Each structure stands twice: as structure tokens, then as C-alpha cells.
Amino acid sequence: MEVIDNILRRIQSEGYFKSVKRYAYLPYDLNLAMQVVEAIGKSRNPNFVIDDENRFTYENLVRWVQGDNAMMCLDPETKQPVPGRLDKGIYIAGNTGTGKSWALEIMSVYTTIDKIQIGFGKDYNGKDILGCLHWANVRTDTMCEEFSREGTYDKYKQWKCLGIQDLGAEPVESLYMGNRVDVLRMILEYRGDRTDRITLVTSNLPINHQKLIDRYGDRVASRLTEMCNYFEIKGADRRKVRNLAPNATKSDGASNAPNK
Image 1 (tube, helix red, strand yellow):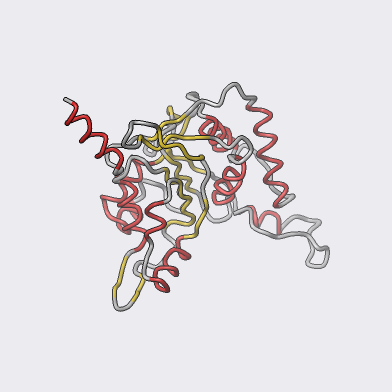
Image 2 (cartoon, rainbow, N blue to C red; image 1 turned 120 degrees about the vertical axis):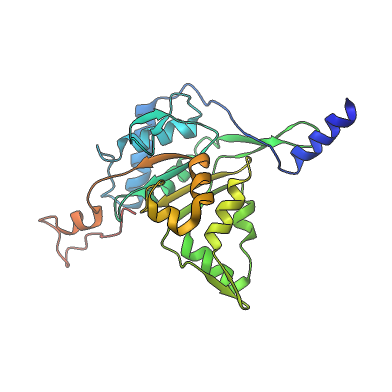
């Protein structure tokens, strides 16, 4: 019935039951793409390198950006490669200094090369709502500081694509005008209930770690698993490794900027 169709279109236009639509940007050369990604990283820090510890993550982030159905991620329980989903976001876990935050920053720059388009559901007339697969990366403590200063975090709920850096490093509660709020819990719950948002996350905590569940609750932990393709970057703290290099001295002008 036309009346029902109109009602459903209106519901979708309000953001309910929308789904992210990905478009395949094929063919592309994975080897060339990886060279470009490494060049982007080196332009920020000459010490950046793609190696055995981060190659799986970067290769599949490229596939994810390009809309390639061959994309893989890790099963959070077994840590074995499994098929990824292009309509989901990204969660990268790793110890301090392994390069997880840099991965989101580098890949955000990579998306600007071809201005990858993505569909964020349909409008009231049934047309795709198009946007770019590009995101700003914001530290969790910055989000909390903004709430304490301005009393709102609405923009982080509404952005179509959002990169959340260092989940778990922020204060448990933020205070504004006597109101105490767990800012990241509220943002993640909201975005997890929407199917027209892409959320990317880095954290020291694995996505199924008990500390993450204790910190944010089962509701958020469950939504993160539904929202994101999971990756881990292992290895030593790359900043410390560089600092221990035999030719590095305090006076040689070498950069110790973190491969975050």
C-alpha cells in the first residue's frame, strides 16, 4: 500500500533501519596501494614501515576502503582470519606504540586519493544518501574535555564516519554543570543503535576483553562486536625500539615521534 510505503520511507529518512551501502572501487593493484600507504606513513615519519606485524591489518584496511569483498578480519575469540564485512567499521587493538592509531590516521588520508563514496541509507524519496568514506580521528580524552567545557558531545553521535582513538584511556566520568556523564559509553551506545554510521576505534583493550566489558558494560561491548571488523597489531613498542637503535643519539636530530 502506498500509505505504508510512505511511512516506511519516512522512518528510513529519520535514520532507522538504514544500512550502509558500499561500492566496489575495482580493479585496483593491492601492491601499489600498499606502496602508497607506506609512502603516506613515511611522509609523516621516515621510520614508519609496513612489516610482518602490521601487514595483515594494512592489506585488509586497503581492501575495506576499496570495497573489495576479499577483505578479511580477525575472529575476536580465535584470532584467526575470517571474512570481513564492508558495511561495518573497524576496531584495532594493540599495546602502546604498536602503531594502531597511526593506522587509522594513515588510512583516513588514503581515502582522500579517490574520494571513495559510500551510501548512508536512503532519503524520503528513496534515493541513496551519499557521502565520502573519510573520517576525523579524535582522542577520547578530547571528547571528554569538550563535554566538560561545552556540555555536549552531539557531533560525535551524528558524524557519519568517526575515528575514536585510545578507547579506554579517557576518564570514566566527565563533569559539566553538576552532571556526570560517561561520554564514550553514551556515544558508542547511540552509534551502535544506528545502522547508518561507520565507527572506527583503536584501543589497548581487545574487543572481547573483560576489562572492556567491565568498563563499558555488556551493551557497549556487544555493539562494538556488531559494529566493527576486528584487528590486532602486535609487536614491541616501536618508539622504544627506535630509541634503542645503535646510531640514535640525543644530539643527532633523529625523530622520536611515535608511530602511534
